[in-house]
Length: 314
Image 1 (tube, rainbow, N blue to C red):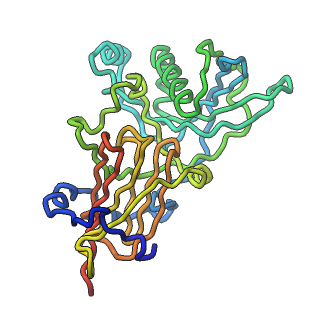
Image 2 (image 1 turned 90 degrees about the horizontal axis):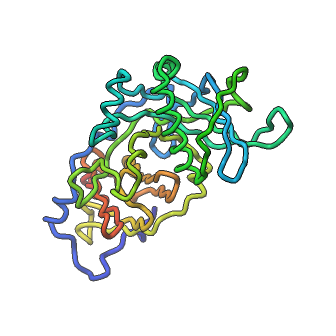
Image 3 (image 1 turned 180 degrees about the vertical axis):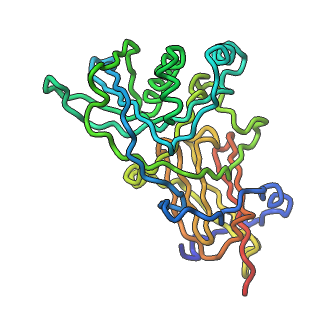
């Protein structure tokens, strides 16, 4: 990125030391070693897996289109907390059912042909193998999972699925199981402002969605199509070698910091959003002190402010 992207505040005023102190958050060290077997995209480590199909469900959308859901497992998906049937019932009856979440990876829909030669859509959903075994033994866990799994697909791909699913007896999958690229690390660099419970989803969202902890995937083509948000970057002080760079990124369609993933390298900033609402990938003209970078998302203004200390001149 050229120096021309470093702009002063429109009012000409400098950021106060107090504002910089408030923006500067303790954040994870971004120089963690990455397994050489893992791959990187935009600073995000991920591993490529081919899930193992275990069972297949057949259902339909609200418009009558046939849908197949291939339930698969992979060790790369985190295992949920091990509960008994009674403990699950207690959690669901409690005031906070979100204390139990099921990590899952929901793959991209792929067009297939069913046995009658008609077109249909298939989804691959991946969980940890131990949880798959638990569903085989417990009808309660199986029904519970299938319900929130359908909600996850509906939310991610804006479809409506009927709940009268049928488990196929003689087929574990429909179509070819697709590779999935699953993130292997999570760097919670962003905090919500004006939010006493940073991990809480907005109140207007359905509570049951919190029961799903979808594993983030590397979806390069979707990221390429995501629009770049408007942003400005200023330096402090405004002349000479800066002590800080401060980026203000406008995200009007984002409700919570939970939707954001921010990765900062030595001179590189990558912002990704859930469902690929936005994607920002820029290089900076100065080297940063990455372990001291931090960010805050203001729900009122929908602005993400990223504070990036700059390495001293050598």
